[in-house]
Length: 523
Image (cartoon, rainbow, N blue to C red; front, side):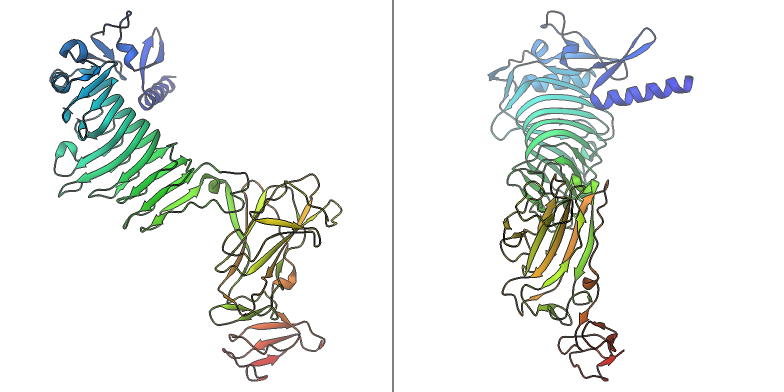
């Protein structure tokens, strides 16, 4: 029982620290109490009590900048000196600096240093180009700061295992300087953020200043810049609102942005030397886009293994179900010419790949990928009796740029595809019980060259849709000995012609010659 009670207290204090509560003992019970400005206001909501209760149930005295140093929050009076005096007083007396509601103008740069507890309920209005700096000490922990609004640049340094709230700022910079001990690093902190126009992580000095292992919750940001003299790493952003934004991640590795919307036009750049930074996109513009595999976000990547991916990637898998390249043996010889390093099309509008009937029970997508747009895709719908449906059915597929042809009963794209517009999303439907998927060589594509064609199924991890491929697309077949193309020693071509005595032809040499007994042998 004692052990269980001890663990319960540990969990309670951990929760309180992360989410900004105090723990208070009432009789035999421990309760959570929110720390904010209302805890330090008297009953008349005007006077300020002399102390506030902290997370560990200890107390700290409060200095009210307005009452003690005559700060005036009218948006016009210069409060530069009052804030300096209040910060110094709070530091020297180990007190909490409190700035009540109001608009406090400052004409010059302000530096508050060494104050462990700060609550700013008002707005700090900095003069043009001026900075409001708060510095603690990287080797002291923890600080607890709550900042409502800084109209200007807010620069924070020397934070370690601390909790900081910034609800609004034109610019918020986390700053480290490797040559200044108090500012050497910012690490292991929890930040609660609101609307931040520009967010910056930056370090400098002849020695590395590092900003690592911080957690950021919320925030709406327009510009993010991560740079400096160190590859800042493992900073985790949760639920940050990023849309129509600019990211310049120039120095960093293994930084993660979870649950990011990424709507609108975004400019994203991962600089030289960056690695393993990940942005998880949580929003999809339509229920079809993911299964079409067309939700890619453009970005510039000069580093290594930086990625923008969808949260849905965690819950889906992509399976390669068919592929053709210069080493393949699963196409008709009358359709493609095989060369040493690539393939060319021998006949237009010939079938390259076709499935048997696929039962449509759960959502999935079929995606064709190629380095060239040289292919035609057909999709056929079937009823419960496995008969093709000759009229157009809605809501079982959504082809981007696709059409239904009543003459062939085929759903298809308007022209040759391969590079783009190749995804076919499929959904359960009251009438469509089966589908058949087909790829042909495109129109007017004879002698066109390509390197590969892949067919991929994308599906939820919770489901599995079997896809049977016809045997005729699993190996080379021909009616007579091959007479063109590049072949390698050991290749086999199966005979489907009239001469039933020949089972297959086997390649004896590597190259483009085709003499019987020298280059090919019959079996």
